[in-house]
Image (cartoon, rainbow, N blue to C red; front, side, top):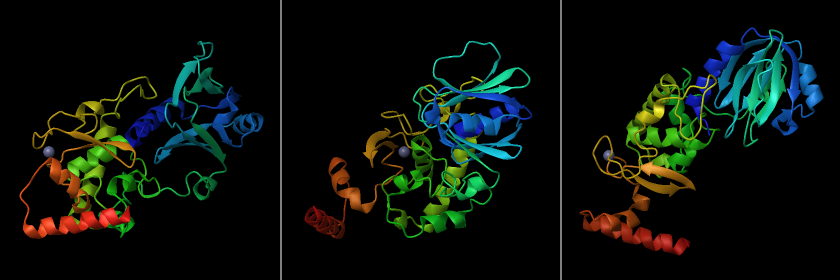
Length: 310
Ligand SMILES: [Zn+2]
């Protein structure tokens, strides 16, 4: 699934390709992509005669601004846009076509058919689903260390699933969460409320730096991701944790290990990212370390408590 850097790359490319183009008509081949309105004829009629002014982004959503209308588009797993000339063969899985007055066509293709499109009167997009519940925008200047600390708050949730929650911070998916946590030296299972102020600040800086570097590189090309112009992103060559299972950590040389956190494949260096105390029991058995008696006793108590909970 494209994450913030990939969607930002698509946004920039699309903005160059379609800003100023006027829609003559719209063809919908797969109505289920349309969420609002869900009637293809109404959808097409609303767009006809309008001009794309700019392409913006909120989280992983594209915000295509027209004169008097806003189109919110989510690519989900495999959605992608491309600009074609009239008469070029229409590829399989092309679900929506915007025919422009200049003879070109913006085509939306989506093999998995999970993508969505919503139309709104300008301004209304902010007060309704899907944009109304989105969290902090990590590349916006409003994403300050203080704001980040405020949303982390006193939540006991593990930090990785918390960062994946789009109502907390937008745009982060499995790749960039693993990258940011490795860069900050924080274990993905650390409860958010156990992060010290220094760690919160380090994580904030790591999120911004990781996403900015990935945007600069044009995103990552895990699987078949291709941006609007058909170029591959380059950031997959800069990944430090994600997808590097068994390869040496770029900081300390220990092998990157893969585990599962809340159902998501997770890449971690156990030397740079110390597991939280609660999960030390099992990991300590695998990698024996010197512990004080007090620690051993605390862990024994903890294990008994864990057992009692089950
Ligand atoms: Zn390491």
